Structure formats: structure tokens, C-alpha cells
Image (tube, rainbow, N blue to C red; front, side, top):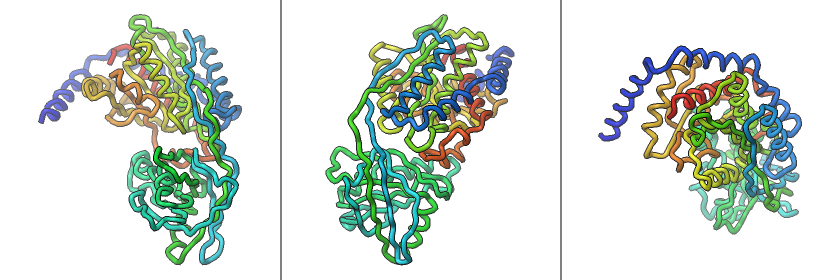
Length: 456
């Protein structure tokens, strides 16, 4: 009952705030932000250059440093007040070469495959075993000993929110090899985390849990080949033959890039925009997450070009090592906490460069309702751009800032095509539409402007 009363009071407050609080100046400012984004922003050029010159930027490899250097050069070209780096240790992983042959009662089944990120290889050996198909991790038992486990659960096509479908299926990729190894399996094959039937295999991190003693390789196959394999397994046994030279390498030092414009009235209050500069090692990391990084730079570009003087400190953070470690986000939060900083808001873009639909947000439970109420009052101004604000997730790299009790916000683009490219060799610049990319940055800039002017 108390929660219902609190929600009712919050809704009344939203209605009161939404009428008469804002001036025509605010509406014209948002209009100018969007016009600049679509006509004058360099965001697509920056992303194109990042993708074509650095390419796949798995943390710790040379391309990741090339990407960091380029992004820092872009930021410095904007004549930002200051740029600096926050270092952290990051894992390194070598994909190497692999082969996967599947023999069925009807002969060899050709499959398109890729090793799961951070997977071990086969140590120069060839692994063979009968394939046993499972849908869930909790179906594992001793019957998988000496078998190759095939996790075939698809992303639920009935869910309109593709990130929800991904979240309900991805456990088999993340923990499948670790859990199956405990029961004596030889290897794991996983259906790719994709929202359509195609021939593109998807990588993504797999995690060996601390108590994993039998660390076995994990490999993903395309959804088209997964459908074929599942159908053939109903007709008789099939066998997998796998070899891989994948292996972890020693950790190394990398860094996140930070750039900021100091606030004129409340410099100790920070509004963060960011994305992760690393990507998987297959495509160019265009949607995941070069787009989010360049959109974050676009926020600063736009406000500087418009001659806007922020009241609060605006900070752009390009995080390292989101894909296979999250050490960039953790080290940034440690740095921030050690310096007694206060992030009143953090906006992360890590859902692709598609048409923006709105924002989802979270915060420490002590302050969430109050801050959501204020944030939702901005919907009046965002409505002409078809942008919503609602409760939901924010982003993996900014979540460690929750203890500072600011509002954590995630940009939410249209997600229907995101998992066509996510973690694949197809995640390239030619899949990003310049207008959609620029509109995402304009949405972020608009919200930053409103939070900076009115507080949160």
C-alpha cells in the first residue's frame, strides 16, 4: 500500500511539473540540437573512421589501443577543458583457428561457427563425442559425461523486447561450458544469440566459474545451422569433431578515456555520457559499441558548437573492457569514489546506433522514485521526438556508480535489428544509418541539457 501511495504522489508530481515549468527557450534548444545533429555533426564520420582504421577492438589487442588513440584525438580536437585516462588491467584472449565437423546419419552437416569469447581451445588435440541436445543448464547431469553438449534454446521470438529475449537465453552461452564441464562433458556447442534465422555465428563471453576444474571449449553455431542440427538429432545420433587453438593470454594494462567540460555553477556535480570503446574481434564494432562512444562525443560537440555554457560538469567516458571483463567500468567507479565525486546522472549508449525510442533508468532504491519523478517531467519536451522515459536497466559500465545515488540512464534505440549484428563479423559501419546514429546522440544531448539546466 505504501508503494502505491508513493507512486500516486509521484504521478501527481509529474503532472504538476510537466505543465508550465519549461520555457519556449527549452523547446527551441531541443529543436536546434536535433537540427545540428542531422545537418552538422561529425558523428558518422568519426564512427566510420574508427571502424575502418581500428577495426575489431578486443581489449588488450593493438586495434583496441588504435581505437583509444583515435577517440582521444577526436575529443582533443573539440578543445575540451581537459582529457585524461583511468588505467586498469584487462584480460587478453587469442581466438586462433578452429574447426567443427558434425557427422549425422545423413552425412556431414556443414555449419558456420565461431569460438565463444574467452573459451579455452583443445590444446592441440581433436575432440570427438556424441552430441546430446539440451535446452537448459539445469538439465545437465552425469549423462553428458564424455559427450558434446549442444544448448539449443533460442531467443524467444514472441517477446517484443529483444533484449529481454537475449537475457532469457544467454545463460547457456555464458555458463554452458563451465557447467557442462563439471559433469564431464568434452565440449559445448551453443545456438547463437540471434533474433532471426541466418547463417552468421555470434560470439560473446563465456565464463569459467571459480570451482570449474574441467574447463572445456565452447563454440557457437549460426541459428540456421542450429535449426538443421536440432532437426537431424530427432532422426538419429550425431557426432562432433572439434579442434581449436584459442587460449587466454596474460593480462595487460589498458585505460578508459575521460573528457570533460567544467560546470560554471556546480562543477562538483557530474553528468556523464559514455559507451565502451572495446568490441569483439570479429566485425568492426560499429553498433557494439562504437556508435555509443561517438554519440557520447557528439553530446559535447553539439553543446560546444551551440555555445552552451553548462552549469554542471559534463563528462564523456569511453570505457575499456566491457565485453570480456567490465574492468573499465569498475576501475572508473573506483577512481571516482576515491576522489569523492558525485555523479548526479550517467547516460550510457550501448544498444546500437538505431533510431532512438527513449531512455530507461535506475538508481539506488533510496532515491529512485524521487529522481524518476523529476526525469519523467522532461517527457513533455521530448515527446515531439517520440522519446519516452521509463524504469529499466541503464548500462553495465555505469552500474558501479549506483552507490553515488545519481540517476543511471540507458539510451534505448529500436532493438529489432540489433541482434542481427551483435557480436558478429557483420557488425560493420555499413549497417549504421547516419541519421539514426545522429538522432541517438541528439536524444542524449537533449536529456543532458535538461538535467544540466534543471537538476535532478
